[in-house]
Length: 202
Image (tube, rainbow, N blue to C red; front, side):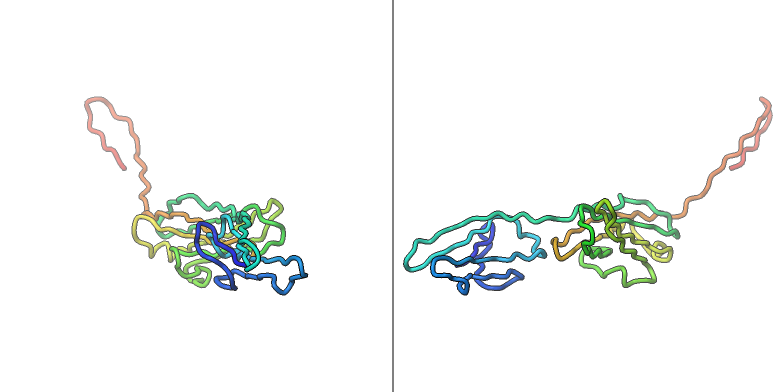
């Protein structure tokens, strides 16, 4: 007994890569046995059709197919934002369609594979919310003033990643543009007689 992965990605006949394989030989009752395959939720490419392949010296090989479709997070994040140099900025990542009491871990990073920003308390603040009555959980990243002032370049990408024991990891990104301080301009109007000089202040 073995299992074939979707899209001819390989054969599973032992515990490997997070998959748990049980050929069911210990449950043989003289007429039947049940083989099982447990698919890890951390496997992002686990969706597709799995084939159970059975053969013996007395019987013809049999292929039995089953479809697997992973449930994934519904995620939204703050749209692209513009922030003034020297100010503070807050970004929000919302994970939806969750069950009450479900434990979801959200991680904020500057770029893919970057450091967890919750460990950098000098430059960032991270608040992990809980699942509300609507099945939503908010995670809030605060980018502190000193970090905003140190950024240089046209834009920066921040990514929030969500994971749990039930779902594979998903992520959502948002962009942040930092612009320099802007002058306040206030023209001052005046009345003047035709044919005379006028002084205009700005």
